[in-house]
Image 1 (spheres, helix red, strand yellow):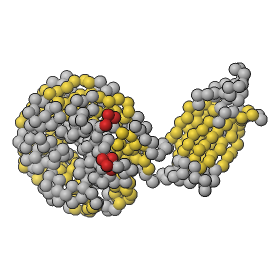
Image 2: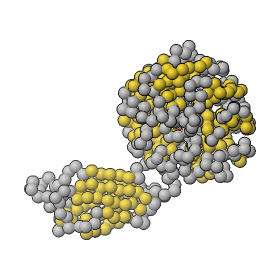
Image 3: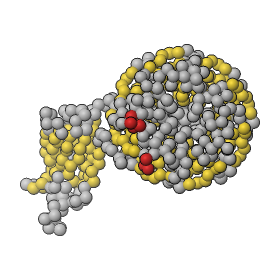
Image 4: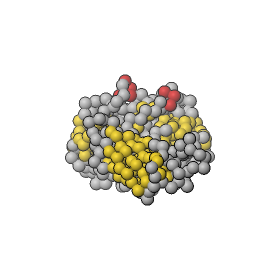
Amino acid sequence: MKKIIYLLSLVTVFILGSCSDDLPKASWDICQVGTLNATAQDEKVLLEWAPMQGANPTGYLVNWTPEVATYEGGSVELDAKTTSYTITGLVNKVTYTITIQAIYGNQRSMISTTKARPISDTEPFKVWSTDMPNGGMVKTANAVFSLDGNTFYLPSAGATGDVTAFDAMTGTVKWTASIPKTTYGGGVAVGKDGTLYQGARNATLYAINSDGTQKWTYATGAANKNLDCFPAVTADGQTVYILDGDNVLHSINTATGVKNWSVKLAGAKNKAGAVAIDKTGNIYVGTRTTIYGFKADGTQLWKVAGKVTEIGSFALDGETLYAAQIGGAGLLALNTADGSTKWNVEAAGDIYAPIVDKSGNIYFTDKGDKALYSVDKAGQLKWKFTIDAAPTYCFPVLDDKETVYFGSGAGRIYAVNSANGEELWHMDSEGTDNNAKIMSGMTIGENQMLYVSYIGGNVAAIKIFAGPEKSTWSCRGGNIHGTNQY
């Protein structure tokens, strides 16, 4: 059941009852206002309203009352031409009840009411939280967005792998697409036409239309049915790639769901690796033992040794491929042209989902060292930010103001200054048990909200006053659509 944690910054009230019931039917002279919008700002609230059609008030009376009695409220009478007013001198983080009445001479209309909670224009706050439907869990997958940014998608890691579409502003469920087997591993990728691609642990890739209906399914035929790898979709939207549980790379026509080609790779089964696509259309694939480069037609360009992390991820930056590796093997930087090693940074344990900023610096989380690392494009350590709980599968994300966010197994969300590794703020989970644990990545929406998921299935949106970094590989999947395409 959806739980509103804090009121949205923007509240709209649509007035359904137009006039007092005891008035003559033809009397439109003391109708209340038609709509009332309240936008919370820093120590103030902007009110906007409109009169009912045909109504002719002589003025408006606005009142505001704080829920905390120690703070002051107030009132103001405005003329009939006024349809907006900013209430100033309010206290941040205090909820105010705001009413407005239309004035008709010596009479007043029915009261229209809304609430707003002023907030600092820099201090993050939780806008809403909700739960995955049908008892769904969230593990490894980060939210990815529709092409217009108004909807985000998450698969369940519970008994089934259903994909759910949520309204990005309110958290309301739009639809749920049924997938009969769990999707413990990789999350959704959204193609150029809005089609969603999601693998499941029945060796099947699902293509889902943007309205939640099924477009097609593709059976990989793998003996190991754990299709845990994140899909990768080409920029033209015509091809989707997936690495199955037997380490076979599949190229699939997105229009028909028919295989273009496939190739068997080396590596341990049931250890989903990574797939990424560069600007030329070349594909890079990693398993537990080997990293490959391929042309779009399946021709192998090169292969080198590598230990790509389970349900791991690549990042691309120009002519460099960054690979997250297991067991202290660290971050490997490869030349995309020939697979030659540029450098390698060791770590204490499994690392996850590198991201890149505009200066070429790379950020990744280390499960063994319980830390977020920053290294420059030459592979030199810039800083290390250590936490108390392992960030297992906690993929970091970068905003357009160069703040890095990531979570931990203890449910804490961290915001870190990318320049020096200093903590800007943190936020703890309000949940219990599995809803106090994060084991997935985060994504930033166009609406300047950070989307966070917990193992127990709770999903939250946090206002951070910054948008996604769009010029680099700034989140798991390379972009907010999760295409794994540079």
